[in-house]
Image 1 (cartoon, helix red, strand yellow):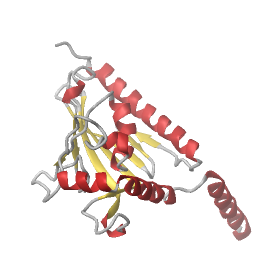
Image 2 (spheres, helix red, strand yellow; image 1 turned 90 degrees about the vertical axis):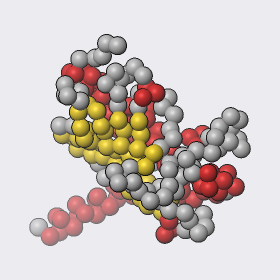
Image 3 (cartoon, helix red, strand yellow; image 1 turned 60 degrees about the horizontal axis):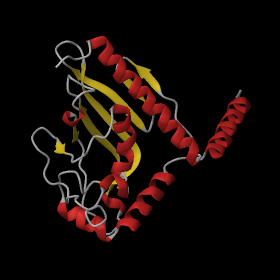
Image 4 (cartoon, helix red, strand yellow; image 1 turned 30 degrees about the vertical axis):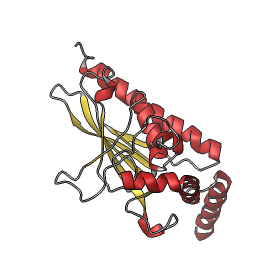
Length: 223
């Protein structure tokens, strides 16, 4: 099978990562949230909520492993004692995405793995392996920008991302049956709780502007 030359391959990935940050910025605006400035470097994109890094390349220099860190986003990292058990919530997560060299062909060969623990119906649970990696049961339905945009809502346990078998005919119980049963029995309460926690982590645009003005006034007064 023919593959894209390294330069075109990497440019395609770069464009898609840029697109992800643009699309997420638009989502934040729709919710009225302040969007943190994005810093860019060689194979590195970052703001306080999302960090995307190229971690390794194929022998010809084409991008292979992408590390995706999500911050200020709630998801369960261990089995909770109750739905609103804050001790079971983590706000920082790392997902590893491995691209096949023939990408964007064979999207079914894109692999997702978790570097941080989760109590999630479609992520394996238990003692971390020696490689500090957990499997993720995730159906890739598009290229990298689609994956990056989709994963926040996958971790927030949105119903259409988890596709629990009680509501989606033909779906399975994922990699953590216990979590899937718990999720199905408490779906609405879980998704509402996580979304409220996510909302609480993000300042509204007007509040942010007011705080920035106050800081500017303090600086002028000090001078």
